[in-house]
Image (cartoon, rainbow, N blue to C red; front, side, top):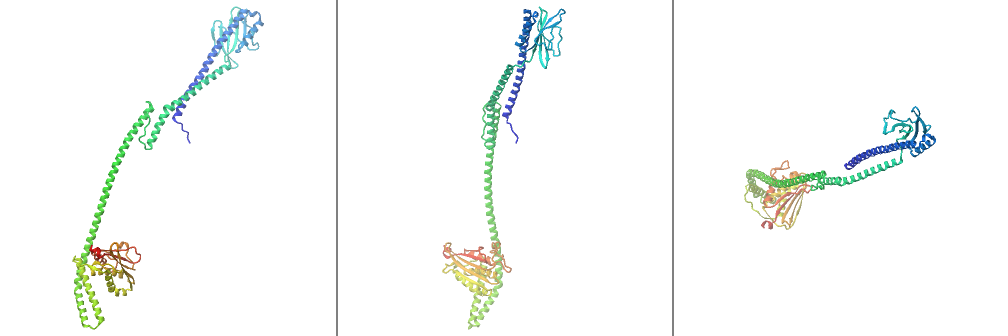
Length: 520
């Protein structure tokens, strides 16, 4: 994890570093200047003491008393700790300097200096005043001054060896105090700069950053406080101007989105309305197509019926005549008379059915009258009893008593039920059970007739088309039986449906209005 230093600490570190460098240079220069001043003072003091010693020696005529001269020199050396060695020279008759007295007899001699003495390698030869010659020398790694003062009256020299660099605790203490004051001032300046930076820079910058965070969170009303007319104030004003532009653009975007949303809602409503209208139109077109198809099929069925009626009319009349002739020839045979009557009745029923079919296809008037549905069912079962017995089909009747009559054409209704029973018989070639039930729906005032068999049933995809003409699921079917049954039931004001909830066989439900409902 890398350590991040923010701008505040960087600026403070830069300022503190600069000030510390300045203070260090100041302390160094102060030390140099202080040492130079102290050395100058000590230099002048050493010359003054040496001159005073020479004058004192000359005034007291100490050359004649070496012992007194030695004591005087020792007092001078003890009083001035920076005086390492003091030698007094006297000139002989040849004007050559001869050592008279020394505070360090065993030390190396200090050569007296005069105007003719050459400068040394340090280049520190000086003549601060008349009769005084000084030179800086290096002795045992320490710099010293050699100060020579001429004694004019007695012809001699006082030469002193004085330390240039004198270690003084006072000087170090002064320097330490000076450094402490400087670094204390540095600490105060840094603290002052921290407070100024915190108030003048960090607080306005934090305010701008907080406003930016709010704006990034979606608050376009966020504004930064403009505290002063400086650079940070310019940044805050620029940020506020940018946020105003963003707010205006956001309002424009919201207005545009609102208009687009309204347009989409309007368009969606129009599309939904158009879709609904199209669905209704498609449904109407489909119904029209179905009616047209049904009409075409009914027309075809009418043509077939007319052809059948024309083709079977003459044979039926011939059969009816022969049956009547046989009945007259066998007046005493009861069984023959009964069978002749049945054959005649069925021939009449066939002729009536053909006529009814022709009447429906030609939209002729068909008379309707109150009809007992249970009686129609009983007659139907008696009619198909021989066929059911031959097919090993067991019949179950569940007829509700005292049913109100329905308004229908008796022969047509029997023909519709016969078509349903014929389909059930065809569905059970190996035998089965045929159930015919009737019941009253008192709430709807409808009479229901249920025809159910135990055959293979009708598939769900085929159930939608079984009532269409010419549609059949049987190998030998014509496709007209259920279509005729539906046409008969709907003409009576009822409806016929397939109950797909049963799991065994086919179940047809006919609903016919009762006489009270029909009359109303």
